[in-house]
Length: 91
Length: 450
Image (cartoon, rainbow over all chains, first blue to last red; front, side, top):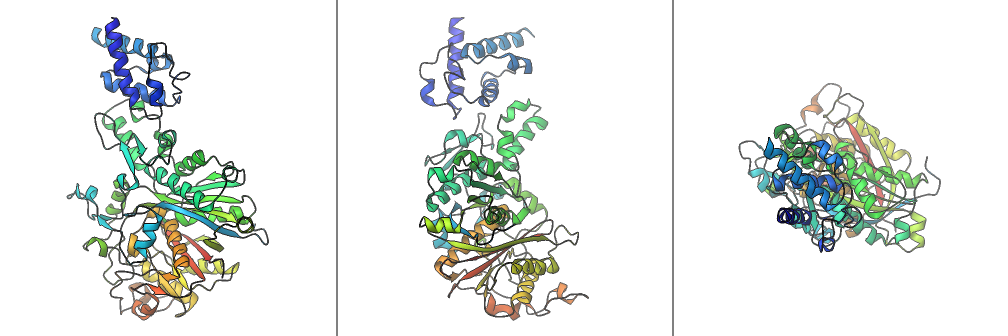
């Protein structure tokens, strides 16, 4: 499980490195507790772009409600990815 | 209305020009009689669908930019990287290609003007910039992802609005330079470039602003080109450098081009007081409409009224008339006749710079205004290249009942239209541009030491 979360975190970091409005220096030492808005200074308009990129990267599709409920910490995004992966596996 | 004694100077310029690394190369190529038109590889990719394949295009690498494409790769530019570090990433994220050029042109203009940070960020500094077309490159992806691929709206990204909205260039420039005055766009098809400068001129002349960054833009977009190609109004059948041929008897359409022309305007006395280099002084601006209900066809009456309006408030005696001259069959000669019937048959030259760089649509008026400022600086008239042969017969519209203008053929005015660069004293130039919808604009600009 921890291994899975680490793999997702690494995939997420790959996505974040393509977001040019995030300072690459802020991606050093990112943990699950890192906050996109307060720690990474991500412009709030970029969160939806990150969500869309995550969907492409992990080949999943979020429901609109998933995104509405998503928190701004890295762990919130990882939780969401796992939940959506499980949901689609159970379908 | 205009405040007595208040004048407007041009103190800076910049932008994006096909095949040119910057303003200096643009100047050099124009005044050595070169053409900036090339065969367009992007158009050649669709040989069965596209009629015309020449253009005055600018690629991203030519502007030291790189388009970042998402994975899996599509043509859609998710954002741009500026390899010269001129524009911060945060500003690039909200910009389409034309906006990036507008921001670069704005920075170049401010640097040339020598404005301080305080002056640039002042409540007295306005931004008036626009393009003729929509953000077509960005919109195409958004629509395709939604309608054709059935994707969620977010797949188009969160910047579809700011990168494609009608006044995106003004918004992006203003966010970059942080001015606190006016931020607006004036949109009037191919009169857009001059229209934005004209509106900014009025803001200063009327006492509402002291400074303005203004001009027009048209970002390279096959999507834009396609619309004109469909109308069959684009030049076809000539070598690229011979494709744009205003006034020539064999002309068969305009060459679609792209670019950006941005200038810095400043209240004249303020500019003088701080020792600014004055590139030109605007003598007057006037715009009107044909009023004949015709979307496309040029109007002799509308153009004569345009001149009358321009002459009402300013002393107009130009050594050069910089015409719109697109190389469409009717427009060139009708415009020539309206100039001749206004100014007489001698004493000035006609310059049609589209002969060298094509028709930049929303950027046409402002890039041609920059070409005009360069004519003032160099004291040379740009050559009307490719005007090899002028019609010795009157045009059909001159033979119609009720025609009010001169019935002489274009060849009778060969002495006004030089294929070579003419060196002479140039004190004042009148700039003319028109757009679909029957909109007409005219501006007179003089050198400072006139």
